[in-house]
Length: 521
Image (tube, rainbow, N blue to C red; front, side):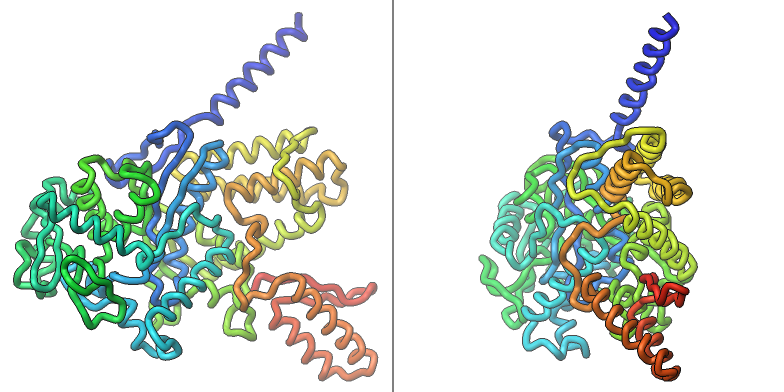
């Protein structure tokens, strides 16, 4: 009887654990101003769209903080067993320099970038767009972001945008002037529901100094199509030669790939108004249906307590941090950069500091030591046998529950660090069963957070693959050893400096020189 009672208690605990793991994925909804459980339109299938960058330059780490948030939504949903269809765009035309002021005027940012010092290397704006689009994707993979289901580009969906603009005109939500086509804000009474910008006089005040089209019916009306037969990127439309406005592209592409209604829309907090507000207005005016049920926004990033600025010297792109020192970077482990970006909760302003980055470099070194010792699984099998396996499974479950609770990354990372410490304490004596459990845990934590192991095979050309690094280091160590045997200490020191520049630390031991990768800084 005692055995039966113990068995019942174990089954009850198992069932409770199962119920806990099937609990809701909760997220803060900017639209409702509440944390809500995500209820998908189709059970077990999340459709979501996240705004990508305008590719007129390299994306900076502030951009990538927002992209990492979207990546964590994808990873968490997948670990819950959901199917995910995820689209994130590339804006390569139409983003005006004054779009942040409700899109009244301004020059296309792509065209402006071509005239910059960096733009001098390109013969035309199309080449500039292709170059920075490629660099974005390289950086995406370097930081171990999962490739989206669809990555549409604005210039490849002009037909859909023209059709959407014409439909808005036909439905009485847009009108033509001599300079372009504008969405009529007064035709959509719910305008302002996302941002809270509902008072007409306040919105007029926001755009008062930059409105230039005297034919606009309301200063809040935003551009759907700009007439310009001299623009560097232009297409023919029913309203003449020109190019689309920034806001219409996301509505057109989201609906083309995800349907008239989507579950979730994400982006940085700077997009709440006007971009996302405008997306809601034009999308719902087109379909008569709610566009996205959940809106998720990532707060701004500061560096060392200040807004990122090139003049302050605290403006970092991904390659500024991860490229080898000899190539203009700091040689930092890319996954330490990623770990730093998710170490603060996405819904709170985040201060990116060198101190935090150094700490995460150390965390990454510990994880790398474990991966080197036990290996990384080559398949999707997960086995958690034995006492260590049970403890590690519990730690992973705790991390998953944290991520399902409004992407609580600080708690999830604390679980990761706790498991790392537990494994390190017995790393030298792990049994085969414990090694298998450790591998499973590493893979599960990486699936969830993406900071354990780089899954992508695509690396930027300025980040040296491990094989190339190994060959270079071994050759230098042989040369250094010969210099030491010849008592050529000057040359030996020069070689050590060269190794340091490659991001390598050399330790001279009784068994010879040993080395390890260092995270930079």
